[in-house]
Image (tube, rainbow, N blue to C red; front, top):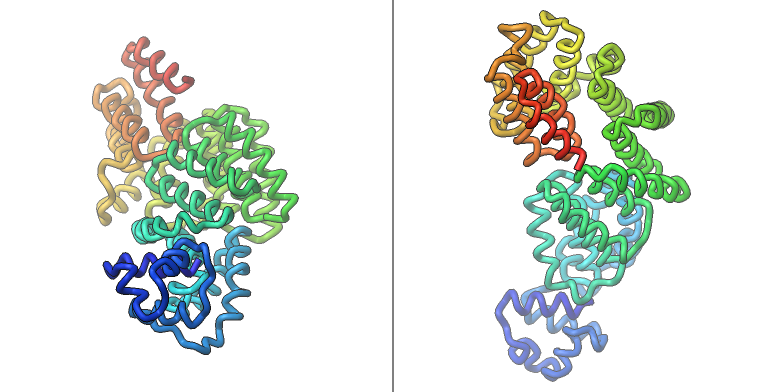
Length: 409
């Protein structure tokens, strides 16, 4: 492994093998070190690193501790204990120089990627993934597994769902476990392949519970419940959301409870069960102060649609005013489907029945089209119902049928 570090550093400094090993060892021996064919003495390694401008302490006392902490970091990552992961990661970051030029370099790069992705710093994690390319020939099976897994998460963040699925499936080839199955199920869900998501998610749940991996069991159950929601299997969705409520209450996790209230409310909304939907979505109101503005707007979009479904137009308009104030004060991406959706909803500010106007049809179509580019399939499916309703109101039945069939296909 240290040979890979030496080779990478040598290439970065544009040094030949001959100039690096002069006075230390033969070129052929350096070549074997770089390719991992031989294990050189610590003295030779130190001299080569010094020639590369890398100075490591001869008596680094933290080496044994680091050897014990690296596996612990991976354990925290696997079980979703990211607070513990970040605390330990920050502690190890004090030894970044040593880790970067030691036998732990590959693990350290991968752990850096994990930390960056957890902090949603995908630009930095992409650069770190590129730096790892040099080390790929030296990866162990487990390192190859994590590299593919993180590559999948990177592409998923860019809404490249099909490519993410490919990376996750490759990760599974190196290590078959519940977490990787969860990620594959999530990618299938994002693509709208709900039957596959349910099948894989059910297998993942069994494995995760056997492993005692409660964090990912909860995450996986949310995907399963959402998949059942989108195929309109309401009984199964409600059963799973109730399971999530019990899990959230058992571990006293407010985020889980908020997620259930929102997603189950959205499920009832999609099924036009407006009373049940608003009863659940109203449970979110005490938590709105903790929401960021994007979550606030997403929640209020669903509450407004419930009010419209119940013909409570004055309530809907009051909520629209609140959202419009939020939109006025922030610079959101104007071409995002969530933001575009308020062009359609704001038409209710001046009419109880704008659906019959060409402007309404244009606005809901723009929302639907944008969602195909910036959101997972579930949002597109959700908006398609409103587009089909508008097309029928304009007697454009052939287009409505085409949209319906395209969503089923």
